[in-house]
Image (cartoon, rainbow, N blue to C red; front, side, top):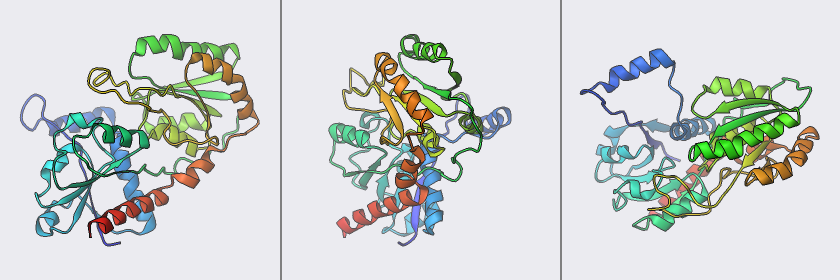
Length: 330
């Protein structure tokens, strides 16, 4: 395929005075260390890594060439503000860094938006339900860095569990009625537990914790891709996932402005990956069998990742989507 032109940019805004975003960025880096990669940026970074693996030529954020060449399709991974920077004649494939919901933006009638990329099927279905205009949508998840996220040689003498806490909404209630009972159940079984909270760790810390556990309990209301749990699967760590399904319950939208179901916390999954539970009752019913399966090594989560979500495979899948779009427009 000819050279790809890929676009990604974080939105940095001034807070107290004009251009203060620049010194604030330097100060943050000095105090906190290197910036952690966000989920949206991870789609972009992993995509470029996949393109390198398959030998596909590309350029990043070349805005000048768009002004000169009307035939180039801009592959905009995000963020939404980038759409305003593109020439009026440039056709756009936008995603997977879409807004949380179509109602957050008003640019959907832009005739240059020829295709959207959603990171999972439930998000595609929600956009199809609520978009004000008819834009074709394809599903494309990022590949996972399987060479980086690979099994450890660390030897465990007994089951050790990492509890991954990404509970975002109704937190007080869910900590009391889900997280704490889970921890109590594990303590009653004398199972060693480690804990990590979303947004409160560096990637290297997560890697080290995964090296020292045999399984992970993943607590999150929903995911559009879920890099953290997929990275664990890539390290061959089976997961017991809280998957309550039902409505998309982002309080910014639900229930007044948006009502959509079904969502999931593990959009990429098979029986190789582990098991799921909807609530604390189901957790207690399933936990013994799950732990037995861990001890007997019944799950093979890395096999699932290697078969479905490698960097090179997903880069190829993205190119196939682009080629089909081009063919449909020719």
